[in-house]
Length: 332
Image 1 (cartoon, rainbow, N blue to C red):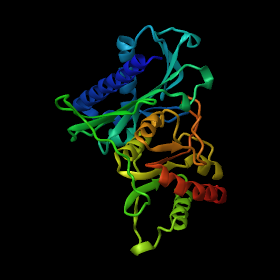
Image 2: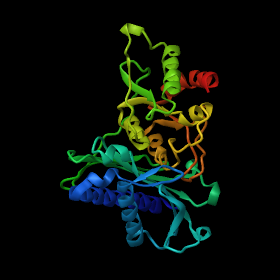
Image 3: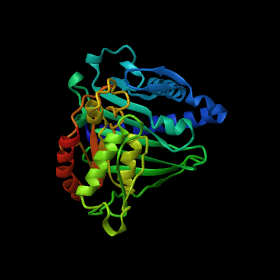
Image 4: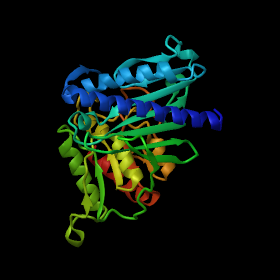
């Protein structure tokens, strides 16, 4: 793709997400209490009624706005077999693969508790070989709670940095948003944590994390309580917290923890659509990688479980990597 085509693709993904945000807000205004109703249970996740609203909005937007000269395969939570636009295009004839999580953080949004995020990313079509490292354009848009006036939007083209804006959801006005991951060289008096959102595996994950802080020399230092924990049930939200400078390290080690505990289902794990906007944090200067420090190369599907680590800067990554590798061999 040319530079101008990549820029157009970025703007399209941003427009898609604004449309989705506005439709969800309108549905909530009409009676959002039904958002929390379970609509379906798939191999990827539990689908709530609010998810079904977003699916319809996305299909309608693609039909109206996606360039017909850019046939695309759509990979999305809730669509197990995928679909293409223009509709009926054979997957082999598409030139792009677009992976979307309409609402990352559904549980936050359906109870009007905390912002969720619309996530989308685009990669050149390579069939089943297309993976996270192939993504060239990504966008994420905040889906704020009903009492919030502002929703942020971040987007990026590989190699061209991040476009960051704050949107006034009441008026539609936009302003530039300063994006700066933390430059801290240690974790003292900062937020950093390992995901343990659900009861399953919480004890094992907590044990590993406590051991991590102990080996890094944080526990008990200067009176203790020097690292703060924030369990944001949204992978996109976690990436945002790193990119905006709120958090210094966040990670999700549920897949190896669940394997150790012999859990039969990976549905409670992070999937490719959850972390498809990792490019944005990377373009902002942060790091997203596998727990062993290798790049994420997971296929763009809806079921692959993903373990990942995110760091605000290279110094923090270099500090944690060897210790984390050692502890994962010990506990997992």
